[in-house]
Image (tube, rainbow, N blue to C red):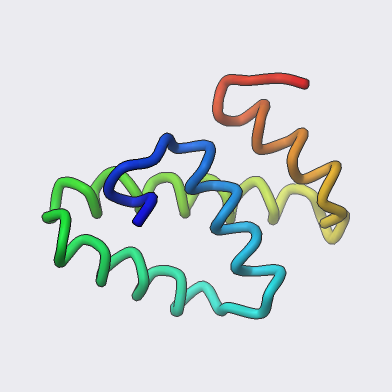
Length: 82
């Protein structure tokens, strides 16, 4: 439901969390699509770039997917730092 109401950072963290729990990229995209059926296509247009940016950031980490490092990268990518 974060695709409808939450800030981008919250959605980004949940995308990462879903991946670490074993969801596939397709499943995450399908879930965003399902949420868009309730919130409308504009919400899908807001969530897909977040998913894309998370996947790009994770790819650049080259296998260093520890939660602390990923959180630092996501915070930086979405305009915050720790």
